[in-house]
Every structure is written in structure tokens, then in C-alpha cells.
Length: 336
Ligand code: AFP
Image (tube, rainbow, N blue to C red; front, side, top):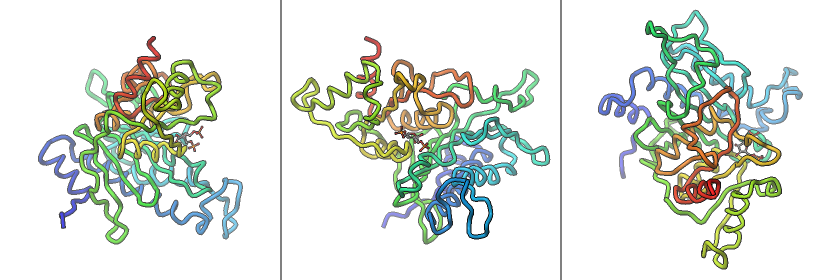
């Protein structure tokens, strides 16, 4: 039986043997992974823990019910504020970045996350997840860390030093990259440690599977409509092969499927969502870093997502990512 290695052993190897990460970044990733165990436990309890529903409900103690989004956000904030490796945190659930409290030491990294992505699927028992992205806090000319304001976060995705996501599904998976490929870990619920089960994930360059919310079809721009129509035409059409479709409406689940067996995931801009739906800083950027590290591609239709210069923390962008040859085809249609 192949001896499985744990997330900690994997990170120590990246720190000690490859000098790819330092102790602070290793602690950060381990802390996020541990927080995701806590979120996984709450998600898995579901209705048993009154974890569903909106914040308007009351739990058995008559306390104001918090949604899982808010709870997940709090779990990640509390886990990450004391480590001394972060200057600030930013979350989909918080309008402004949260500087590390002054009674804790600050460090060189900026952490961004979507604490519970796909949360509209919670009540219907479909996989959800957590997405995170790590940047370095810029320094002043004097070498001091900049004030971790929103401006400090507005770096293109190619500046990321690490990214990852958890999927709370039939198994709890933790997928990361620190710049030398993509590695997937499964939470062993007997030992409660993450075990490497998907080493060096690679996305097939071709696919016959697309993921898009078809209910938006009437709003798509011509290049997207052309691409999907050609997939739907199948073997009788210009592609000469049949295509399958999947749409979980949880980005973490759709992206993990693309990592596992290829595919193209699309949330394009359209006549209603003129900037797309997904958030650049803590959904598109981390997922694009991961997809590129697995040999795939990620654009907004015309530009590599990791090259987009952000202008606002919560800005949205179009996302077309996955099997390289398909993403390049869609991007070429946008350029014609
Ligand atoms: P929620 O977190 O509001 O459920 O949105 C999930 C998401 O941001 C992303 O995970 C999905 O890919 C996408 O939105 C689903 O969007 P549609 O509901 O429009 O299909």
C-alpha cells in the first residue's frame, strides 16, 4: 500500500527541499486547511445544526441564526488573525479589508477568500466550498509594509504566491498550488488529517464537456453563442464530435471536475451581467492560478485573467477556464 503523505509533510517538503515557501506561508496554508475542517464539520451537520436557512431564523436557543456564509467567514477570520504572517484579510463577506488587530504581530502576506462559495446550494445538499488567494503585502520604498488598505490588495493575479480551494462534497477535498503544480488532499475523517490523493493534477488539453448556465443564453455575446451552438451541433456540426454538459452552480465543484477530467467552465459577461458574475480577486484569480498550474488556460474572453489589473476589491469579471485548446478556441472567437 502506497504510504500516503499528509498536507503537513507535503508543505514541509516544499519549504525544506524546494525553498518554494517559507515558514510563514506554510503556517498560513496549514491554518486555512484547519479552518476548512471546521467549516466542513458545520456544513456536514446541515439541518441538524440549524446551519441552513437565512439569518432571519432562530436556533434552538432562541439566538439569532447566522448563515453558514457568516459562520464560515468568522471561522477563517479567527483562525488567521493571530499567526503573525498576515498584514490583512479580505473576504466576499466583508466590504472592506480587515487589518490584523494591533495586539497581534503583522506579517508579509495578504489573504483573500470566498468563505462559502456556492452557498445557494447549501439548502439542497449540493457541494459547496471555500476559495482562497495569497498575495504579498507591498512595501514602501523604505522597506516597511504598506498600510493594508484596499489599494494594497489590487494586484494582478499573476502576483499570487499561493491559491487553493476546499470542496465540501461526498469527500472534503483541499486543492492547492504554491507555484509548482496542483495537489489535491482528501480529509481522512478517521485521522482527521488531509492526505495527498491527487498529486500533480494535469488538465487534458482537449475536452468534450462544457459547463455554463444555459438559462442565460439569450443574453450571451456572439462569440459565446457561436461556441456553445457548435458544441450543441455535436458530431453533425463543425466540431465533428458530441459534447456533454454539466453545471453544478458551485464553482469549486465545477472546477474540481475540470481539473479531474478536463472541460471548459464558462461564466461570460452578457447583456445583463456586463462584468460577468464571478469575483476577480477571490474566485477568478485563485482558480485561474490553479488551472494554469495544471496546464489549463483562463481568460475573460480576450485577456488572460491573471494579467487583469484590478481596480476594486469586489469587482467581477468574465471567466472562461479549463482545457487549454477549448479556452483558446473561445478566446479566438472573441478576437475575430
Ligand atoms: P452563490 O455563492 O451565490 O451560490 O454563487 C455561486 C457562484 O458564485 C459560483 O460558485 C457559481 O459558479 C455561480 O455563482 C453560479 O451562478 P448561477 O447561479 O447564475 O448559475
